[in-house]
Every structure is written in structure tokens, then in C-alpha cells.
Length: 59
Image 1: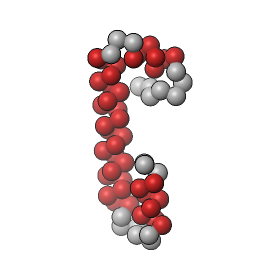
Image 2: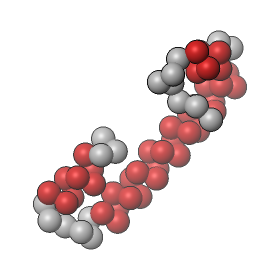
Image 3: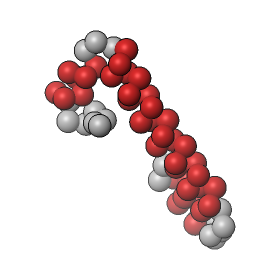
Image 4: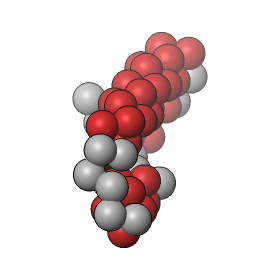
């Protein structure tokens, strides 16, 4: 979704549409970071799983 939104704006030929697409990217990235922090605080085994699984978010 983070790649599709800016790519679709360029496919339509609208460079101005990249401005809200960048905002969308920033909101989603912040939300993912906040969610990861929340899970690390609230779920006991989540931090261990993040360290064990290479594809899990880190931070």
C-alpha cells in the first residue's frame, strides 16, 4: 500500500498528488511505529519474538 499510492499518482500523471501521498506515507509509518511500541509494552513475549524473527519490525 505504501508503494501503490505514490505509484498510482504517477501512473495518472499527477505530480501534485504526490504531496498527499507523502502525507499518507508519514501517517502509516508513524502508526506502525506506535503500534510496535504498544505491542512491546503490553505483550510479554512480543519483544522476544521481534528479536528472534528477522522480518519482524525492530526499533
